[in-house]
Amino acid sequence: MKKLISVLASLVMLVSLVPGGLAASAAGLQKGDVDGDNNIDASDASKVLLEYAAAVNGDETTFTAEQSAATDVNSDNTVDASDASLILFIYRR
Image (tube, rainbow, N blue to C red; front, side, top):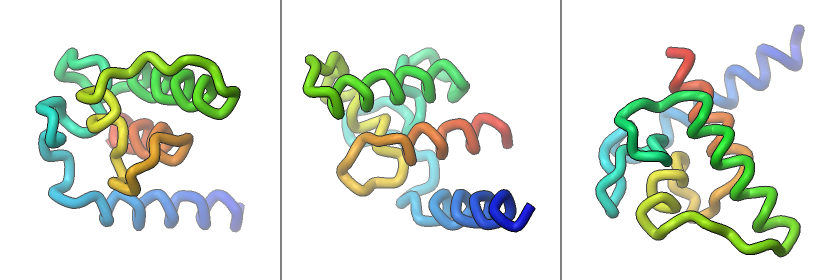
């Protein structure tokens, strides 16, 4: 239970660090809306995890620059599992 509370608290802190909240990324898509369907949902998080797994495994990545900008929800200049977690957190709100 303590671990769950710790994880949730961390996610809340990460969301609060997102500059501009859920404003549009520099490329035009809303932060978190990786597929551009105007909905931030679990499919966006899934796409982020697939892209991250491809990058970690040295496989070809498929995101456009616009998608990559929308994916970096915590604005740390890295697309990773923490961005997918934040997308799920936003979706659950």
